Image 1 (cartoon, helix red, strand yellow):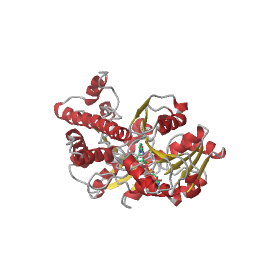
Image 2 (image 1 turned 30 degrees about the horizontal axis):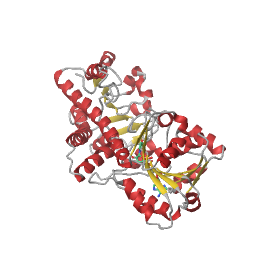
Image 3 (image 1 turned 45 degrees about the horizontal axis):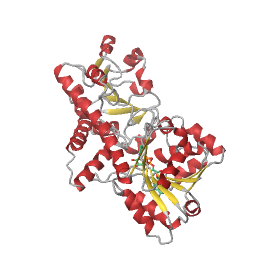
Length: 430
Ligand SMILES: NC(=O)c1ccc[n+]([C@@H]2O[C@H](COP(=O)([O-])OP(=O)(O)OC[C@H]3O[C@@H](n4cnc5c(N)ncnc54)[C@H](O)[C@@H]3O)[C@@H](O)[C@H]2O)c1
């Protein structure tokens, strides 16, 4: 079976590498010339733990190849996975221009029966839209469009691909279902087989539910701060209730990343378009936006709104640990807000600095490690909970800082840290 993957981003490249590792012949089409050059030279264009080794192994085996050439590759493929981006428009609607372009390009090239699979997160009706695009080419005899949404998490993508909780197959024929099951045979995980439209909405319902859980505990954290309670204990206790579960109950600066914010907004847009007022999703979206915007208020409260001659250290700028992705990262918003004051900002992140530099002002100093970033600072803000930040040499930190004040937006330390002479501010504790 010959497989083509279109788009070598966080989803497409993982899919391509893992399927090549399963023994399939995989061609990956990437239009970005810089990314393509890296890939051809054996370098992956982003950070994902474990991906580079698996990538190199499969590159050597010659089962994995990269190109920007559609023609020959599309016409000889049995299965084509669309893995391009679906960024949000200003009104929340998903921008389908990349998917449309790819469908058009595919429609001109496919010849025999081909299965076209959407891995990208796409609104309900997109399978139909791809089908219509393919039908425009009268010479195409037969094809199937499948919706097979992806649930991997950046930072744990290989494991999530190899051991997914479920595999969703939204299709219209048994033939397409059988082909998808053949591809994923090695995974031995539960399938949910349904129609394309249900598969499409499952992805949005899934991500919006997780975003709701995060937003809920964040609001409980705010209440805990005002009543002298401890949110971590509340989260632990309610998480022990089997009906609730412990995951996604960690209070923090608000959710970010390339998926949750855009998927919640797209779900709301789809509801509005289909006469359904999704009140919970709207509340979640609003609460999270306000939370990220209000992070700067926490900083102002600590500095008493004085920023002259102040240096602030930000540890962690990626939207979560183990990724270099800074899309919709709360840290980026916070750094921009602080950047409007007279304070000097120093940032360190193990992987996210290259991408952050493209987003932030040139006046920000990007440092080589956490201790360099802490030197002579008046405030440390922990934005992303990278493991290496959980074990800082606190005596050294105290010596390096001008004033030992910490704003811990991920609660990776406890208030016991005050015993070492730090002023400590966390989320949801008082
Ligand atoms: N990143 C995640 O954690 C994640 C998880 C699950 C689902 N998704 C969804 O998967 C989709 C892809 O996300 P991503 O994070 O991998 O995006 P990405 O931006 O990292 O990658 C998309 C890639 O597609 C390429 N591309 C765009 N148009 C192309 C074309 N015509 N031909 C060839 N290549 C083209 C881009 O150059 C880019 O490299 C989105 O819909 C997203 O919502 C993402």
